Every structure is written in structure tokens, then in C-alpha cells.
Image 1 (cartoon, rainbow, N blue to C red):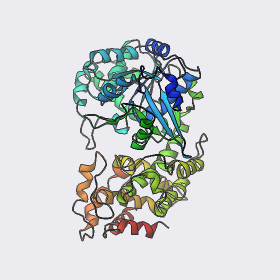
Image 2: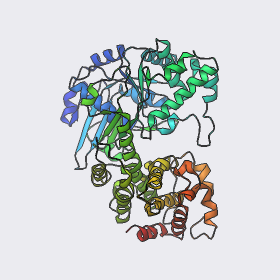
Image 3: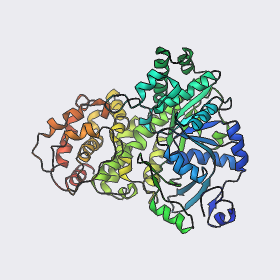
Amino acid sequence: MKLSEQGLLNRAQWEEKGYALPQYDRAAVTAATKENPFWIHFGPGNIFRAFQANVVQNLLNAGLLDRGLVVAEGYDYEIIEKMNHPHDDYNLLVTLKADGNVEKTVIGSVVESLTVNSENETDWKRLKEIFAKDSLQMVSFTITEKGYSLVNGKGDYLPGVPEDMENGPAKAMSYMGKVAALLYARYEAGQKPIAMVSMDNCSHNGDKLYAAINTFAEKWTENGVAEEGFKAYVNDKSKVTFPWTMIDKITPRPDASVEAILKADGLEDLEPVVTSKNTWVAPFVNAEETEYLVIEDAFPNGKPEALAKGGLMFTERETVDKVEKMKVCTCLNPLHTSLAVFGCLLGYEKISEEMKDPQLRKLVETIGYVEGLPVVVNPGVLDPKEFIDTVLSIRIPNPFMPDTPQRIATDTSQKLAIRFGETIKAYAASDELNVADLKLIPLVFAGWLRYLMAVDDEGEAFELSPDPLLDSVCPHVAGISLGSETDVEAAIAPVLKDAKIFGVDLYEAGLAQAVTGYFKEMIAGEGAVRRTLEKYVA
């Protein structure tokens, strides 16, 4: 059994093993999609393959859509070349349910995959053709928050960005430069309307995408390498929109235990590929069953109405903002980050196992229900308390979800400001709440500083997860060791003052002393992290 067009010809063999297969004429869907594409997605990673691609598959199965998806990859071309193409764009979704059931679905809704490579004449020409099509309604993205940035963590332009600003759209090389160049192709084709939809897990994601595209539009028109009208086009909401969205679905890295299930069924060629850019991809993705995608209803070329029947929620921007703040700032993401930091320090390898730890469970319950929930505005479409209930009782404890604290600890410096800083700001602005009542959010900050020492609670070294600010923040703890007599506060003060990291200057917010105190207790010696948790998480 091989995951490919040829390998799926014997449908009975797959169905006997419990696999749900596409229930539509894929050849017809492919032809219709290539002629009149309605949705192209940038970033064919795990969440897209488990969520958006599955939604479209379900709608195709039900006869509510007649066209599928086009995907494009602008950072790591090997994903397309070594995973999508060899499997004829098929993907295998393994849904791991909290009750122990496993659902296996072959997804064929992606019918075309391209590299966003301006030096690949064939793919680049095809992308321009797609962007010029009247039928195109949505361009969406899951490229991670940092994918929209034109600068690195130090504020320096990323490679290719200055050259793109000077040279214009003809041979763009940076990721956002290439996206802007494709949007320019749509402008040149008649200023056709389009929704540019970030679906990444970050605050006001549409604004981040807009900021990057608008910067190129301004620079290109300023430098005379694009028509003056392009800037106006990007800023005309009747032509181009950048909706806000809130997405939520846990999709860990494909797990060896899931791979073993598939191999036992007789599937071949399941081995993951690690690209030269260190991207880890496999023909399958494992995911939880819970999923939410709330989208601002701003589609100047019309939206595919069927998507609402697939579970996507379309609403006004204000409601998206409330849902996103509810999830990102309080009801899920801060809890995940808290578990990630302490999970790495305490030697956990699965997030679900941490929920069996009395202190860690109490930690996230208190941060969610006690410290966070009081500042959440109920968005109406989802109830905040019910959302946290599901997170803490079903989603995170799901023993079949092989998610790791090490994965979630990735880019923590980029997450703290949103996941905790917004709560601190809300407390500071409130007449009824007191910042000094925040006890466990500062404990997480101290835990992160302790994590940066790259030594676990037993004194053993471990590898820090990737983070663009490691070179900037780690030196502040480099001279600190367990049992250290160093002037700790002097060492970490510059980090605590950095509002870009925490969302606020922790000295101005009145939380620096608490963080410093917790940190001192955590570096007292081996086992100090556990003792600190036992002391303060009651």
C-alpha cells in the first residue's frame, strides 16, 4: 500500500484497513481547480494538512464543492519536491481521539502544489497565472508568525529584503517579497479583488501580513519599480483585504507510534524527510479532533459559501479579535507555554503526561481560570470557560496526542508578550484588578529564564528549542549556575526591562521583583524548580 494515485487504485484494500478515502472524482476536481482555482494556500504544513485540507475534502465528499486546493511553499522547496510530488499531493490524516479511537483519512483535496521560487520559471509562471484568475477568492497562509517579518529578532532586514525593495517584483527573492510580487501580478491583470488571509496562530495576523505587503508596495512605488496605483490597490478594501482569523488545532510532529500503526496496516514509504533546512515532514499528520477557525468576513471577490458548512465561522472583525484574545492570551496558548517551559525543566517528553503532575496541572488551572479568565471578554460564538474546560479536561490530557514540551517551547521569546503581556496590561488598566495579584504568570517568566540556562532540574544539560532571541537573552544567564552567588538581579534586569519580550517593562509593571525572587529560588540547586513549584502552586 503506497500513498499515491497508483497506490490508491485498489480502494478495497485501503477500506478494509479502516481508511476513509476521497468520495469524489479527483481527476474532475483537479481539472476544474486548475482552470478556475478559488483558494491557494501558502505553507503546506501539519495544521493545514490536518485542518483546512480536511474541511475541503469533507465538502468535496458531500458535493458542496467542485474544486479543491492549490498549495505553495515559499521557504523550503524540498517539502513540495520530496513530499507533495512523490505522493501525488495526497496526505494521510490520523485523528487521535481522547477516547482512544483512531481515525485514518486519505485526503486528496490538494490537487496542485508549487514552489514559490521566482527562479523556477515553470512554477513562478503558474503562480502568476493563478493570481491573475478571476475565480481566485482567497490566498491563505500558515507560515508561522515570524514568516511575515521583514527583519530578524535584532531588527536587521532578512536576506533578500533590501534587494527586493530596490529591484521590485520582477525577481523577488524574500518570502514576503515574492507574495507581494504575486499580488502585483493580480494588480496588473486588472486590479482584481482578493482576500489575503493569514491563518497563523498569532495576534491580529491579518495586520502582520498587511504590514509586510504594504511595505513592499510603498517601497516599490517610491523606488519607481512598480506602478503608483499598486499602493492604492493594496489599501483599497474593496479590492484587497487582510482579514483577521483565529485558528486552533493541535497538530504535533508526526509521531513514531502513529507511524507504527500505519506500517502495521501495510503502508510503505512512510519514512519522514528532513530537508536541508531542517524541516521535518512525513506523508502523514497526526492531530486532535477539536478544531476552530474563525474568520473575519471580508472577501471582496466573494467567499466560498460552502466553507461555513464545513465548520468555519465567519463573523465581524471585533468578534474575531475577542475569540483570538480569548484563546491566544488566556484560554490555551499561555497554558501551553507554561507547560512547555516547566516540562523541559522537569524532563517531561509529552504534554499530556504533565497534566498528571499535581503542581503543573494546578499551575495551568490557576493561570487559566483565576488569573486569566477575569480579563476575557466573551466573544459570543465560543464560551471562554467552556473553552478552558475542554482544553484542560480533554485536549491537553489526551494521552494519544504525542505533543512535546520541546516543540511548544520553540520561539518562546516571541510568544510571551501576547500570551501573558496582554493579561498584565488588562490588569493594569482595570479599576477592579490588581497586577500584584498575578502570582503564577511571573512564576512562568522566572521558569523561562531558568529554562534559558539549558540545565534541567536534575542538573543535566539539555538542548534549547529554536528561538530567534537565544543569542540575545542567553548571555544574561550564562554566568549563572545552580547554587550561584552571582548578582542575579543585575544579570537578568536587562531582560526583565524588555517590553518586546514580555509585552511590558516588568519593572514598570511592578512584577520584576517577583520574577527575580522566583528565579533565585529556582537556581538554589538541583531539585529547586520542583521545590519552588511545590511552594507557590498550592
